[in-house]
Image (cartoon, rainbow, N blue to C red; front, side, top):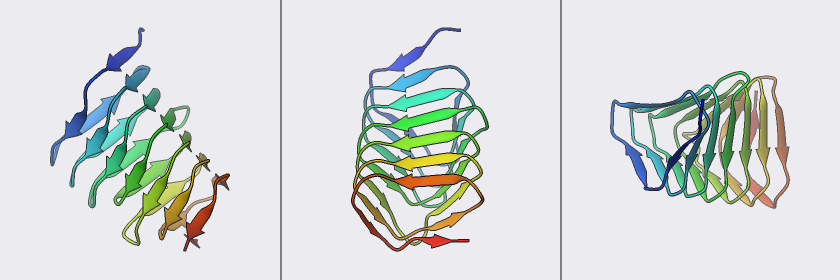
Length: 135
């Protein structure tokens, strides 16, 4: 099917979900509020800031791709079975869990105090101020 382009900021309110089943571009920011859910089963490109708040979840399914081109703040849980790429600054605190069986690439500067789980491929290309726990 065609591509969906959102030219406005998107805020997924508490308890709601945002599902990406076809190629989607978010030109401005995307905020996933607490207790909300982001599900990507196709391709998602976010050109604005992305924020995953505490108690929120994002799931990038197998065969799916998520590309984050601007500053990203992750506090909730990120599950990656497909591929995820962060090309700008990424900030995560100790409440953040990243579980990957896929690929996660951090190309920008990172400030990470998070837990990484799984057997996926994780690469850091930018400068990192990190306290990363791998299990």
